[in-house]
Image (cartoon, rainbow, N blue to C red; front, top):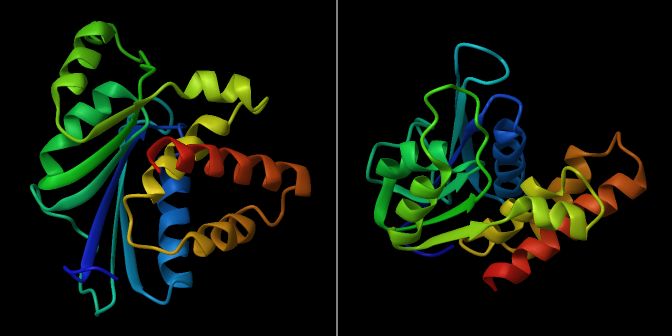
Length: 194
């Protein structure tokens, strides 16, 4: 693992988008990589539609708290542009962002999507991903999140092998076909930031 010995990831989205699932996959991959890891999460006022974010901290040394302070995260995974922008302040100067470009307009006062995307385009180290396109390309409605995670894995100091193990464990109750679709989406995402 690279120095520093601790790596922090923020996953930000809206209820029902899968932020917690992505965080749990990162947590599992870190554990399977032999690291210490902890996760915390915040849910908005409603299960679906409210803000949801999760923080995952992993290290080759012990961890006392999963809380990531503003300005210290190494990676931000955004499931939609507004929530990505709301969580940018968590990133450290050398941090990276992988985010979906499709807005989830869940309020009357949602800002103009074009303005949000313009702000993200001006932000350093941001990879915008059109997750809907990949869902169509891979013939899998849920592919977008796995493509985002796959793209983000290249910024994390974890071996590629742990991701397959984590995915298989997380989705073990699903059919082999669903597991393979998730793995294909993860691989497609990795190609985007290789």
